[in-house]
Length: 191
Image 1 (cartoon, helix red, strand yellow):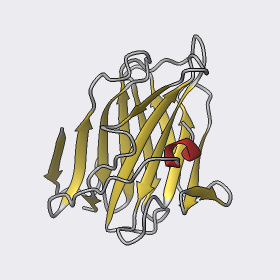
Image 2 (cartoon, one colour):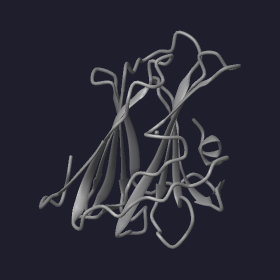
Image 3 (tube, one colour):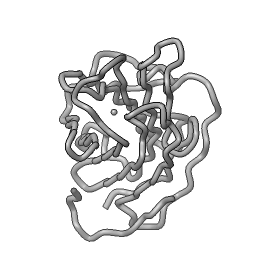
C-alpha cells in the first residue's frame, strides 16, 4: 500500500544491477500527488524462505538528498549459508526509458556497495564517487541508502525498483521484489 504525503521540511529523515535489469516489461509509474516528497510502500511476507524478505520501503526525496530505507524480516550481521544482496534502481528522467543509476549492495556486515550509472539497461563506467552511503541497521532490520541530489543531477522526481536476492541455495535463489517483479514505485517529487 502506498502512502504519500506532502512535507514542508527541507530535510527528511541496496542482487546485482544486471540481475535487476534483465528481463520483464517495465511497469509505468503513476505521478504522485503534487508536492509529495515522501512515499512508503509496505510489502507482504512473500519471500518467507529468506530472512531478508523486503517488508517496507520508505522514500524521502528532499532538496539535498534522496533517502531510501528498506525494512527486512530479519537482517543479520552474518549469513549462516549463502549471502544476500539488494539492488535499487533509480529512474530520474521521465522521458528516458529505465533507470539512470543503480545501487548494488550486500546485506551482511563487511559487504561492499557500488553506485553505477545505467545506460540502456546496463551499468556503464566506473563506480560513482559522488556523495552517497549505505548503512545496515541490524537492530532495526533495515538498510538506509542516502545519495546527494547532485549525484542524481538534481531531478524534479524519482522512482525506484527494488530487488533482493538471497543465495542460501545458489541452485534455487530466493528473489523478492518490492510489490511485483520489475515494477516501479510511483514518482516522488522533490520537496
